[in-house]
Image 1 (cartoon, rainbow, N blue to C red):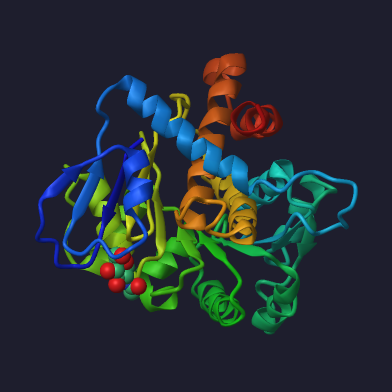
Image 2: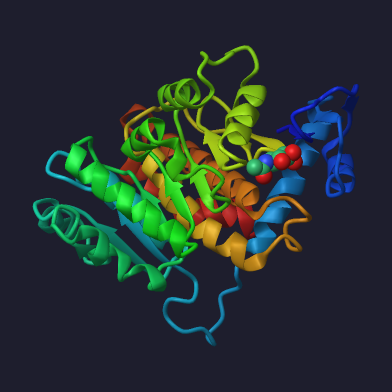
Amino acid sequence: MATRAAAGAAVTGAAVVALLSAGFALYGPPLDAVLERAFWLNKAHSIKDMETTFQLVRNIIPPLTTKKHKGQDGRIGVVGGCQEYTGAPYFAAISALKVGADLSHVFCTREAAPVIKSYSPELIVHPVLDSPNAVQDVGKWLPRLHALVVGPGLGRDHVLLSTVKGILEVSRARDVPVIIDADGLWLIAQQPALIQGYQKAVLTPNHMEFSRLSEAVLGDPVDSSDPQEAVLRLSQALGNVTVVRKGERDVISDGKQVLECSQEGSSRRCGGQGDLLSGSLGVLVHWALLAGPEKTNGFSPLLVAAFGACSLTRQCSRQAFQKHGRSTTTTDMIAEVGPAFTSLFET
Ligand SMILES: *[C@@H]1O[C@H](CO)[C@@H](O)[C@H](O)[C@H]1NC(C)=O
């Protein structure tokens, strides 16, 4: 894992090699014209840095107590699910529950709803996304939701996408955090203004989606030789929206710093892992914002939440692969959320 802090567009100063711990101390006051990087100096340091970041994730996790009422630990909504795709919104919504949300809602099309309901009695499923009043129908739930995951199994139907545009606008107006993935990102590549400068948005592109977004927003092809720089630039160009680029290592930036998550995962690349990530992220974003920057040592809460969700997804993948090898599927990974969460964050 490495971190980098950059200040301002005018980067003129020397690069300062520093450890992550020094990064914590330096960050906060304006770092004008300083580009600071923490490199992997050696293995011992990288393990220590990773451990430091895990501690920040542990800091944001709300304790389980008998004093709380239902809903306090998270009411998450997933916007997606249409005739062709019903698995993705299910994976995202069930992952949110498994991580520790109290309630998980899915807002999908009429046809997709009975299918998604049949997968699980634990989800609340609203068959509203293709109704003429879809934006109002989802909008009236927003005051009760802590985060919205937009995109799993959405598809590219232009009527649905224009509904989702309306949902993003009302979410933003109500200050509801949004995690955008899959075809939600396709919409953002068409209309970046929808999330431009929205500090409570997190984008989770894979390699392809990242290239498409970068070209749409920055107007030039991605420089693949420096993924950290590429993610930092995209985040800044979007007004410091948090970007999580999934890949061999996940690279995360809030426009100021860059974190890398290289927690061991597995070589399986079955569909649905991204939904596990986006659903978990919905919960962790809520917890991180509730905890605030004093619990995250000055790091952006969304950056810490993203690191937590990336490492959790990777750990689930690793544990599932140990049991099932080549036949590992996302369902096997979701079954590992509990033990993976405990081994990473509760030991
Ligand atoms: C994004 O962060 C950079 C680095 O701190 C800062 O210089 C810039 O003004 C920020 N941009 C916005 C739109 O907040």
